[in-house]
Image 1 (cartoon, helix red, strand yellow):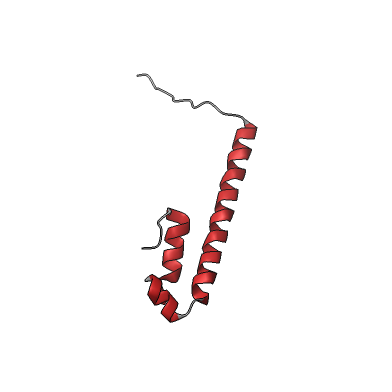
Image 2 (tube, rainbow, N blue to C red; image 1 turned 30 degrees about the horizontal axis):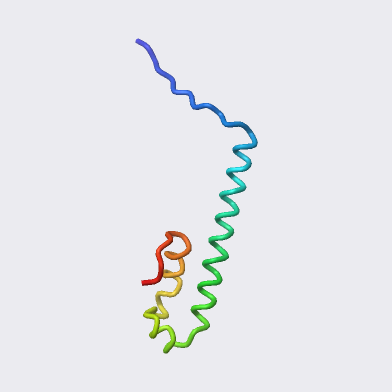
Length: 74
């Protein structure tokens, strides 16, 4: 009975460090975009939010969808 082993080539130490760094930078950017979006939307009055069609209860959810799933406000 034979066994098969799959070997994936390593791209090197620097590739791993760079990809981890890049992922951390993207996550930091998304967190910053999310925080700024929530801050700016919460600063709007209820009338202004109503004009753009965003209920106050949905601010955090809409900001999350926009920052993490690239979905624009609808």
